[in-house]
Length: 225
Image 1 (tube, one colour):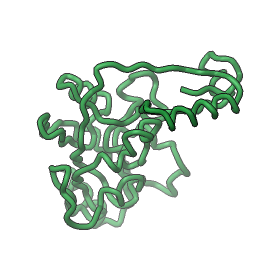
Image 2 (cartoon, helix red, strand yellow):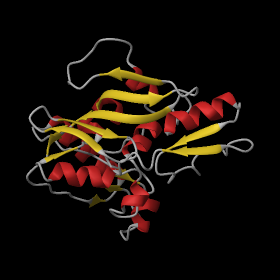
Image 3 (cartoon, helix red, strand yellow):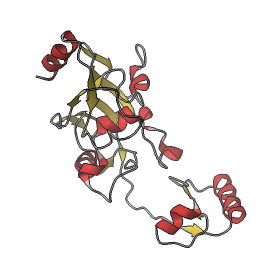
Image 4 (cartoon, helix red, strand yellow):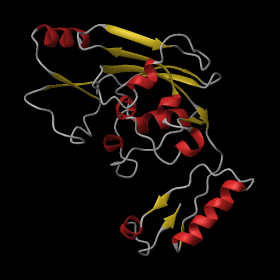
């Protein structure tokens, strides 16, 4: 049904806006004029998971929280942060994996695991005329062809509607421990330099501004997570 709808909109010269769970359509400047929102919300299936190869293929509307829960049952995870605007572990506010890729969102985990575009192995999409296109494959070492995955990551839906994704997964750490340190900027910066030069390999080093630290219930000083 989705390709047919897009073809009809194209033939009628009607503008349409690609979307996932539609949780972040208010981001960025408003779309000019009337526009039909074409959502991938109901494309929410996990199509293939190969735990031995650490790859998973999902439809783009699959909620990110649901996908992480499925992978956790196999001792794996996607090395991606919940995007800005997520309320706790709420599935709706976290949005879909397709929306995360379209926005190109990445947080503190990219220090260790790189960004979302580096987790992509394959992509399927609908062009503006309803034609289906594919790029990449289902294995980590597939390097043939033009790298459409990086082109579409962060494109904000301006190049087409992402419908399917193949991503690489990672072993879920058996244990995690976070540490919040607060103090002067100079002292915390010295600690960061020491950490980066030490034998430790922290997954993330996040700076919090005094305003953000105060909003989280800490004192109004710089904070290092």
